[in-house]
Amino acid sequence: MADGPHLFHPESRHIPELADLLAGWKPGKTASLGPQTPNLPATVAELDGRLVGFLTGHHRFRDWNALVDLRHLAGTDGSWLAELFVHPAHRRTGIGAALVRHFVGESIAAGCSAVIVRPDASDSLEEQETRKAFFVELGFSALRLDPGIRFLPDWLMGRPNDLG
Ligand SMILES: CC(C)(COP(=O)(O)OP(=O)(O)OC[C@H]1O[C@@H](n2cnc3c(N)ncnc32)[C@H](O)[C@@H]1OP(=O)(O)O)[C@@H](O)C(=O)NCCC(=O)NCCS
Image (cartoon, rainbow, N blue to C red; front, side, top):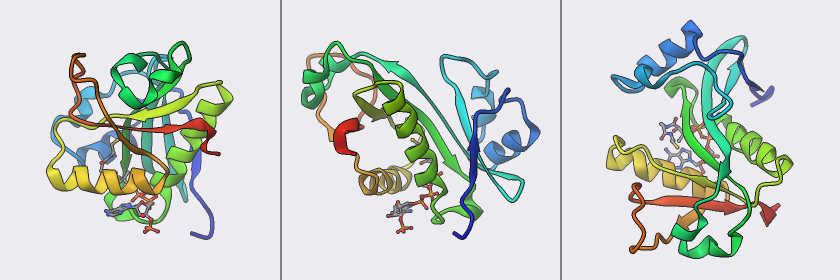
């Protein structure tokens, strides 16, 4: 796109446009919208003054022991990308990638060693495949979970921050 989206942390997630955006995603999704909190801050993407995407996540992931491939990061902080959504009418224009790169940049600035992303359990198989293709394109790969450690998601993907 000629002019990329404007990315910023809104003061509150209680913004009407965001509710509209989520209403077009999944029934009940608006229920997960709480006030903007330090624990799960949101980043939103605005294009031509309109809200077109959002991401939530935090930079305090520590549960490396459950992740076979990333146990060597024990003792470090990681970033947890929880939710990501781009308005259907604006997909495949780089907005999702811009939001993830922005989050990875914040993760690196916060001194975190890797970014982990988890699925939404309510996703259809098609949605999961789309997401996997998207995150692979951004340098993420599937992580092996330790079967001996109870870990709720069926799959996780991760990206060490030293990839550049
Ligand atoms: C997944 C999602 C965030 C991608 O956002 P987006 O803005 O459309 O993605 P981008 O335009 O930045 O795509 C970057 C690259 O990812 C890959 N990609 C994105 N969507 C894809 C799809 N549907 N199928 C295959 N590859 C895809 C492509 O390589 C794409 O580059 P290209 O368009 O030049 O080929 C968006 O489809 C979405 O909101 N989906 C529903 C919610 C969801 O699954 N969220 C993730 C929760 S963690």
